[in-house]
Length: 173
Image (cartoon, rainbow, N blue to C red; front, side, top):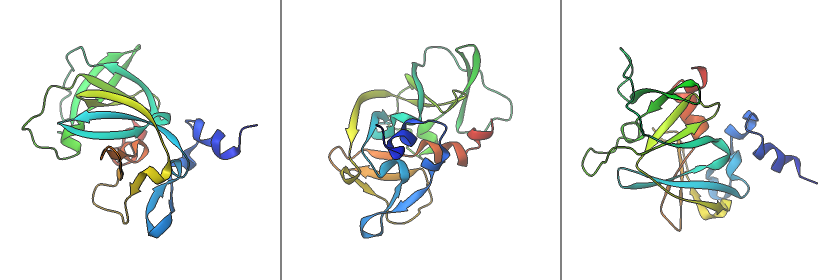
């Protein structure tokens, strides 16, 4: 039988995964990082990132021109029609403060949560199994809350998509 912790990690509606627990040496690991999890490795502006797969609704090719909305924030690329609904697209490079040099046009969309928002990325690398001790979790809260750690082997920055949704108001769209 599945443990309740394992079942909670597989339940995309379980909001308790968003909290943090203090791990070894005072490092702050999100609850979903307390046990092994699968992560998607991807690239934006030449930088490597990882995100837990349980947070992703889907991954899509960014093939169509986004419609820019009047008054939209600078970090928002626009909207596209995706699976019979409007999908808002966030410019991940802009959100993370990456420079324009070396940036290419995003080719993929990482569709989050209920499928109303997506993060644009340049390249999808791989889906991997990650144990909690394979991540160097942040030691204190910083200015960018959704950067929660670094994968030690690949030096990919680990992003928390639930915090991204909360901070950008994506969870209320």
